[in-house]
Length: 277
Image (tube, rainbow, N blue to C red):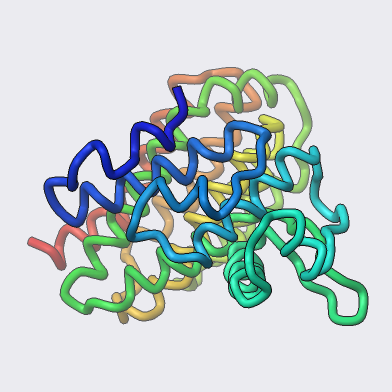
């Protein structure tokens, strides 16, 4: 049964605006699972609130899926897309601009349109702005980001330990040493911190996990300086926790690794809790 049929006007009006938005999003995503490129008339039935630009965006994404295109593959020009998808030139133009902002489409002037890298950079921008837009809530948002980071680090602990057990990691050891030196001099070490976690997760060979973790870290780094928080008196705890994480991973001790992860987050969590309570 098609999602279009389920989401049509015959189902009645949604209970509220949020329900309507959720239904439209489900219809949009579900419509991409099939390889038939939807026409304007078919897609329009999914939700009366959806704009022609949204319909064109869905059609372009469905075209990419149907044609089995991947990052860097060329897309048809505007005129060809209009004919192929059955949408107007203005709708295609606006849809391409939005898809470019989402890194789904890449436009190179003089060369044409291509499938983008579909990175998580737009997620970083959105989360960073969300965390900074409301001064009364930004501490809460940062704490939420940190909690998600901790969940990811704990959840992937076994895979990290399995991958790193018995190996040599001179670059990670150097980063851990640099963080310890910075901590002893009462200096922060955000750049070394993100490099450490990025390299740590690379051994798992999960591109989605690595991108998500990096994105959350970038949000952390973007928001933290805006809060004007004092430098933690426990920088050495965080620095030593990185060394403990590395040592536990190389020794194959997953419980010690998880314990070090928890210690790693304690200082920043304590700072945020002190400001929120």
